[in-house]
Length: 122
Image (tube, helix red, strand yellow):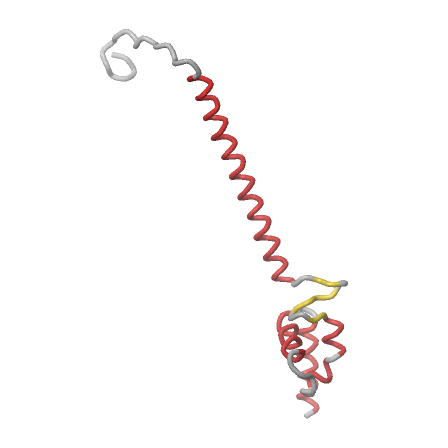
């Protein structure tokens, strides 16, 4: 018995390949490899875009070293901070400042501290 559990028999005869068959097989295999490489590159590029977008969304984009949340930068938020706290800032700037303060890692704590101090003062 052979390894295939069949009675010992002579191996099957090889038949000649049709003209161009080996070349077609090689082209098909190269095409598969090219698609795999392209797919891996596409997945890596998509991962980089998603990661970069997540970082951008998490930290906000900066303009001149300042955070730009809500369409307004930190220096403008701080400049109008006292008027904002007093309710003197008109819309839509008031909404922009509110969004900025809610998302900004610098201005959020600053405005929280300002509110606490105002509450203590009465």
